Image (cartoon, rainbow, N blue to C red; front, side, top):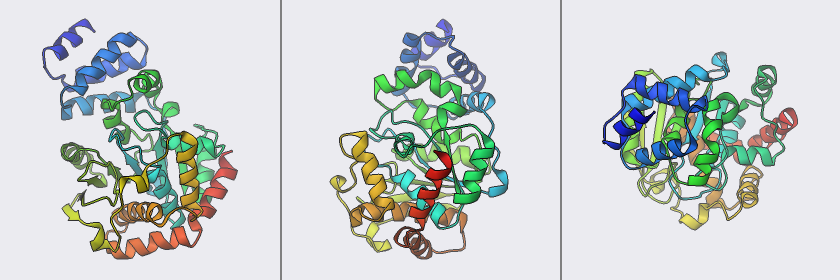
Length: 331
């Protein structure tokens, strides 16, 4: 570990195997908290390499609790976090809209570390009991089109560093890894990134794994489609730049989509969106994220058609029915 630290402090990059062994050692409790903090801090001060990401990912996938949903051809909708914007649970809300539209979702999430409320906070507030019981998770996706995988239960390394991440309160390389370690390895993924350079990193990794993906980045720094301005959409087939008005939406301000000052406020917004009692702007942000997720699955449909499908799911109370049944099954 001393040699690894010295190498990192000397501005050198780790190779794939060194990264893998480092993360295994962290997960097994062989690295002191002070050293883990130092490692995280070093990665905050420089970019992470593709080899380092792949090595870390290999370690986490080796140690994961497996969750096979391959027959469902599901999608995961997730953001890296770390954008510092403290928006409400947009990707989680969009997941229920997509499920309400009839598409299988295997949502992989965690408690908030850099934001006030992560997807697991929103789920726990509904009374959801997190589990690795595949029979229960399969029943959930069979009956509601959505299963929720609480990251620390499936990835022990994330559980080991959770207190350190929370105490630091800033984005770390674990934010980068989170979207890549869904233990079900879903067929499709919509990923939001806080930095444009990150989209290139993920695009390379997804293409190497032959994943059907979409990466979104709002140019003003959000790790989701925020409708606060223009955003980029990167897929296996190239990239496009969109403006909210082109899609029939008005631009919103940051205050329109902020998640509040407490977990309870953030969860209240999530529930009001699904119940269609939220503001029009909050619901439209969820609709547009759900629509771009649907288009990753429905490649032959226009984004306009996908927006209509997402609107029907939310305004037609299909997403609300999914959440109600999901809570019944997972309580």
